Image (cartoon, rainbow over all chains, first blue to last red; front, side, top):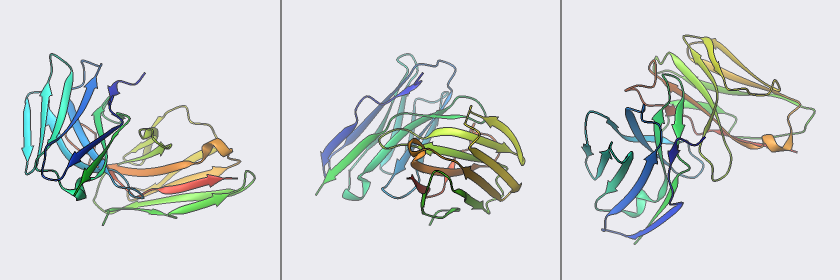
Amino acid sequence: DQQVKQNSPSLSVQEGRISILNCDYTNSMFDYFLWYKKYPAEGPTFLISISSIKDKNEDGRFTVFLNKSAKHLSLHIVPSQPGDSAVYFCAAPYNNNDMRFGAGTRLTVKP
Amino acid sequence: DTEVTQTPKHLVMGMTNKKSLKCEQHMGHRAMYWYKQKAKKPPELMFVYSYEKLSINESVPSRFSPECPNSSLLNLHLHALQPEDSALYLCASSQQGLYNSPLHFGNGTRLTVT
């Protein structure tokens, strides 16, 4: 049962524009969410997180929004840069030891 | 540079071979993990060690055998693997648990079983 879903396998945006990556979850017990970025031939790296007590968390060009009623979160990257081209995974801890990941969205930022 | 180091980066092995994957972290993290990732799929949890004790084994076949010699090291022993076991094997660590503490991943070992 995939409890974290990323329905867009790929996204292409122009450099300087906004990238919006979406994630839905089904488990209402999730209360902490993370985004990871993965370059080819590297492991995923932590990007940004949000607790369910917040609806927004910002870190530089990256902002994560959480809509608990819709069980939806999104990652905004503004402005997008070619170096942001990577696969982005949405994730949530199922329990204290088990992180559940979405299938990932491949972002391509064109110069 | 990643703070979780995995060796080797690539491994090709036959179905009758025995090999080991190694992972090391020096961040003082007390939980270490093995994940398996197939192409275009999310990482899937295999094993979790918390304070050097195996706490989760996600119904992984016995041809995969984890070992945690100390809080900084994690091994995955491989024996009699099948071609469908070919994947990227990721090691990760976290401070204690996953709530409010992100996973730190290594760069993985790309395993090919022939």
